[in-house]
Image 1 (cartoon, rainbow, N blue to C red):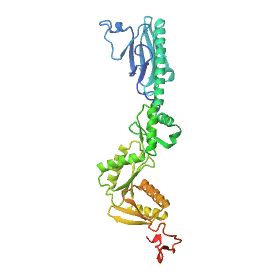
Image 2 (tube, rainbow, N blue to C red; image 1 turned 135 degrees about the vertical axis):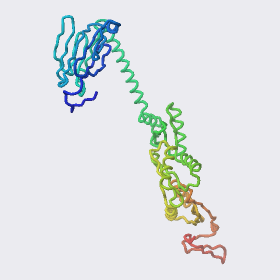
Image 3 (cartoon, rainbow, N blue to C red; image 1 turned 45 degrees about the vertical axis):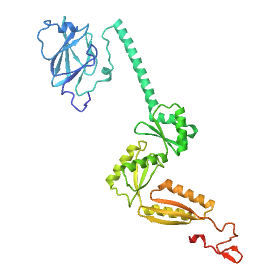
Image 4 (cartoon, one colour; image 1 turned 180 degrees about the horizontal axis):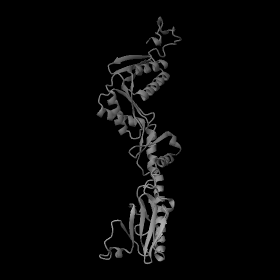
Length: 395
């Protein structure tokens, strides 16, 4: 019972708590006035015809031996003044008793308090044995056995809890991955599956083999960005056909971002939030999935800026739902390598659903004909025949 120290101690009722007997730990409310306690062997108390008709304020306390009947006299206007009257063969003996202290009448131990008080530690820690001798020894042995079993159970439960914590599982996976763990990110999914995020397909294959050889028996799944993009693309094609989006970015697997076209994606705010929840449901390793918007003009401008920075000649073709940049000309090996790296980097960031690239190579038909020096140079094709090519940036 909760303590209510603000209540006046002289009002309310008295609570009696039995500290031994088969009713050990039981509590009863006693109203002001007289309460009779009948303490004795259970068959004697319940035998038909053995007792006269008793008043309503009577408590029957079973006790194998040492039971003495007694009365408690509680004054209504001062609950702290309680009289205990023992009813034994030598007559009634009265004494005043204190609250919140262990009391004893015969072999029965109990305590009293106001209903607005809490039990004192002395009362709560009092455990009075029922009988002495062999039964007490047996009880002690049983108590020790029970305590030992409980301790072992707690230790086993604590060990299992520590072993099964997400931190322990993540550490175990990092140990399996060894020195290569920096190439991976281990995440706990909301579906109790641990996800190992690899940078590419080659790393993901290696991680699967390591986990299989390491005899890891917890649910684990290895993923990589390209694989997840394919999976999410298939899901979007089935559930959101026609949705104008760029790409799902997985630079941070905990917070993936799906980029939509601001001009072509017809989603209101409620639909956008629903899409975020749906994506989070199929990506249990993510804490939150963001659905962002990007202007088509900005995506195209980034492509133009990159091509210009790489000094690559191109031709632009605009379409209703896409724009194509054709990289053209007689590219040497260095220019071709720069073009492919730029295209790969752009697709890695924004995908190829809106901005697309094509490389149109032209053979250098002047090769091995003569020597060309500078933009104003010329090529001597044959005696009496000179060719003056246009500067490349004119394309």
